Image (cartoon, rainbow, N blue to C red; front, side, top):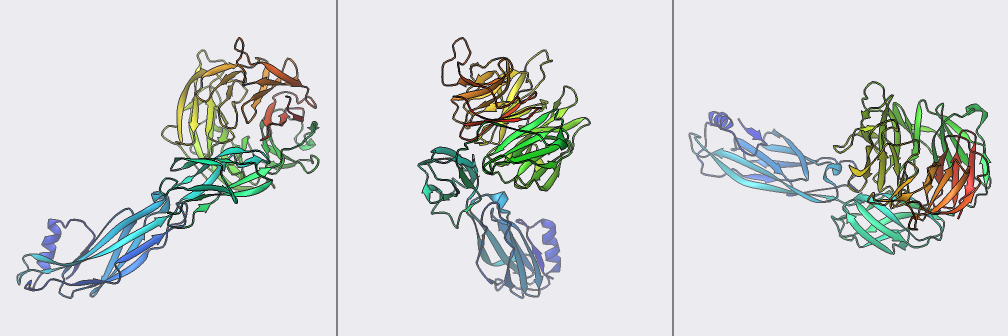
Length: 540
């Protein structure tokens, strides 16, 4: 009888079984084992690739061997299985998942040893020669995202590049198409900060150069350079099918496609596209719609309903993957979302009343909800994110609460939530941030820096606010003036208030419940209320 095991140590019970099976042998020779190959190699295109297929090797065992051990170790190997037919063992080597390993060069070993009786009574065993199989598994880095993925023509700027394996192999260069980055810094294994020069209108694949990488480096990221829009002041009306509009759920500007996306009450998404002039909107229905946002790479419009998240084509509004909400308690619903540069959307939940509920991450490329250990329970929180996706701030609570509640943030670099040290009860005005999260406006009035140090105030009559991408201006829609006001965020606020430096009347009265958006160059504002949408050049 012959025994086969994968155990690293043979138990006493197994030895008893082996010895009881021994009936001959004089130990005059060691058992001899040969193997079909001593080297096995695996490779995957990136950490996001599928697991490579298993590889099979064979071992020929000495006919006198009564016990065979096949042992393995090392990160490269997920498992080893085998079967014995006569004197031949077929050994199947399964590699580990690339996603579990990440980028790098990983190794492992497989040891095959045959044993025979050491004496005629087979009272003990003697091992034969060991055959060692060396396993090597190579996985190059991957570039997944660049944020913001839209830049402005003839304007040098910076971007955050996200991926994996940036510190496993030395990165010697970053390119946008054929143009080298002016500077770059490898911040971590998953993040590079790069500056690019003024570029022409075009789509530029974002690549890294790492000569020591074991294979070509996959890049899924493209920097899209667009011309600064030259929209004239105008108004856009709502179609009769959705009128009257009582509430604007969300307003987003799709700079890549020159389109305005509006979520309105009744579960409708309106898309106004510009082609020399603004056209009539196309529409898509999403039941119980609560918020919309473009994915990190702009390839999906994320439509958040109270019980599910649907990926929608941002150009055609065709519905794609639908991901049901995680198991939620009674009266809890998916509320709002903001997208980070790691490909995750931070999704908050609400309750019909005042109560703390869970916060989730939603992965856009492998659609699924998750709940990190650091995700806080919050009271009907509302997120707002920077254009580079590095930081998302979450305000919570209700003005009716007697005590202020803590403001949290999500840092994409570490994929963690933390409390900021600022406490307030949110109002109806969502948090607003500049491109790189250096200026943060909460409740439409309080302005903070990147460390959440209080800097100054905007008027208490503010109904909606956006921050210019370069952090030099805050633009508000003011209830007292019924105008768009401009405030200099580079000035030292006298008496706590930032100085007003400009004002302009909107092209038309947007109405109540105004939401605002801004173009990437900071030159155009969009205001949507229950009456209509105003497209407005920004004041000085």
